[in-house]
Length: 104
Image (cartoon, rainbow, N blue to C red):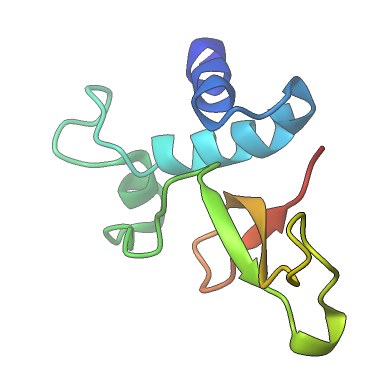
């Protein structure tokens, strides 16, 4: 499990301070993946009795761009206002909501 979390952080280019977020996402996906412990079923399916909905899964830690409202824009490096800001997309809760995290 530790190798999977470290791989997620490395692939996303995120610091170790995101360990908890990576762990939560890893467990969320792991529980929805078939295992040899219960052949033909996932841990989620065994516990809840229904197949898991994986339609909300996304690439964890990928770069996402957030549109900045016109009145909130600040000048960019070439003098033109920035229309968007980049962040890491952290999604795993199985809801239609996503979390964006800015870091420096």
